[in-house]
Length: 91
Image 1 (tube, rainbow, N blue to C red):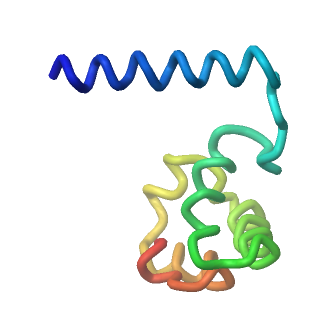
Image 2 (image 1 turned 60 degrees about the horizontal axis):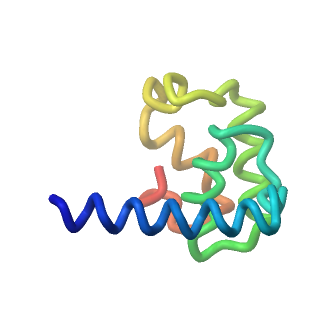
């Protein structure tokens, strides 16, 4: 446990140094934490343009919260994210 705590402290120190030196980078094209999380999952082995299509379908289907994703049947979610590839696993 102590080793994990020390590692966490060291990683946070490195992060803080980078952040102090370079500031926020705004490189992720997400519109909030939910899009960043879902985009990170969907972009695995997929082109971002295909992920954007899947995200747009999720928005259009009002599936734009963790609660909405949780309530949606897996097959329906798979259909929404089909363009991102490996859609059954990602759903």
